[in-house]
Image (cartoon, one colour):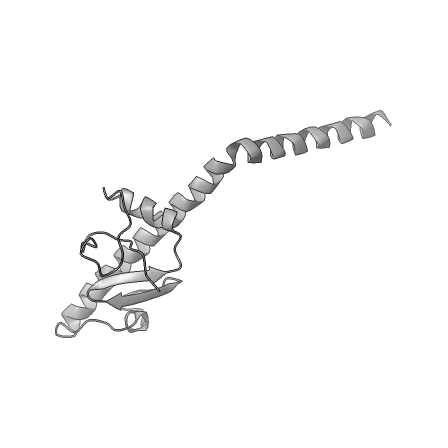
Length: 132
């Protein structure tokens, strides 16, 4: 009976620690996830951009029109997930949250998220807002 009481107390204490860590550290967990998504976005964008340059070199300057053009195993071994598109020399992906875009841009020294295609969207800014 004594070991049952000790086990129940231990479970209650562990559950209390889990709840407290989520309550007091929840923003850190959320920020960590956003930073990880931003880093993954930048990595995938760099890989796609490099593969597109190789594609252009092999095809007389013609740019790829879809991600599938790069996915034959020669340019990209595996296709990144997400809705990646090529527009006006930019590689873009929809579905990112604005805070993830801001973190991606901040990692390269920009403290804002410009609108895609606007004058503020410089070629080296990786993430922009896609307007409906």
